[in-house]
Amino acid sequence: MNLGLEGKVALVTGGGQGVGRQICIELAGEGAAVVVNDLFAERAQAVAGEIEAAGGRALAAPADITRPEQVDAMVRLAAEHFGKPISVLVNNAGIVPERREKGGRTPLFLDMPVADWAKVVDLNVYGTMHCCRAVLPGMIEHGAGRIVNIISEAGRVGEAQLAVYSGAKAAIAAFGKAIAREHGRHRITVNSVALGAVSHAGIKDGPLSVGATVDNDERLGKMLNLYPIAKGLGRLCRPEDVSGVVAFLASERALFVTGQTLGASGGFVML
Ligand SMILES: NC(=O)c1ccc[n+]([C@@H]2O[C@H](COP(=O)([O-])OP(=O)(O)OC[C@H]3O[C@@H](n4cnc5c(N)ncnc54)[C@H](O)[C@@H]3O)[C@@H](O)[C@H]2O)c1
Image 1 (cartoon, rainbow, N blue to C red):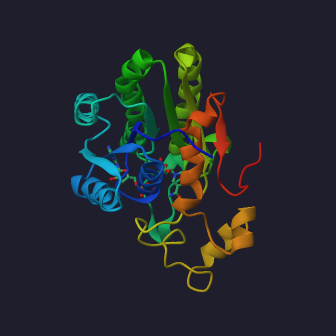
Image 2 (image 1 turned 180 degrees about the horizontal axis):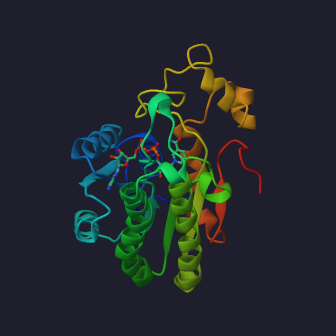
């Protein structure tokens, strides 16, 4: 299937590691020129270098997406660099900074300091909004665009000890639907992909780290039982299990898919 991504310019936020890194690599493999954003320049440069070494086109674009002026400058730079505006935006950067207590547990809502709420909302919600605001004018001008938000199943069903994060991810999906309604007439689609637990090299310890096995981490065995496909595979989801889903939603082939949230969590949630 030709996804029609050849020659498109795609911006992936938080593309320096984990899920975002793999989305960058996937889109570049489909022929897109990829703007690899990350808060950490060295991460963005490493992924852009990987893409270029494989024969693709990429631009490392370090910026803090919670800062609208940095987002605007990044989008301008990308358009200048590739000679055309961004037509695919993947809002991937997101964190779970609810402070982890001993044993890797995050706190209940009532135990979470108010100051920590802002970090979650700033990156997940405002970061997504800043990026949408920056790329939409170029998409409108060209009468086409794809926006894919990476959310969490926590945003669809709520998760204990991730209350603020759950609310922030739900906000992104609802915001995306509203934008989808406002800009369908410009042939811009906006969708969200809801992830469950994804294991990758950027996660250093606990059941989501790449070194975790059911023998050395008893929580992993319990987690696998929550995800029908993971249970079948005997492992958690990996970035390469979801990057193709994102590429499809970013593609020409998904023109009539908009305002949707697609679960890519191995059956953790079935709506
Ligand atoms: N890994 C999981 O289990 C999981 C589960 C559900 C949803 N998700 C979602 O998937 C997305 C990616 O998750 P991940 O595990 O790959 O995350 P990660 O934390 O490993 O990587 C996120 C990247 O975003 C960058 N970043 C952080 N703040 C930034 C900012 N202000 N501006 C620009 N970049 C910034 C980080 O430097 C990092 O490289 C997130 O939205 C996350 O909420 C992940």
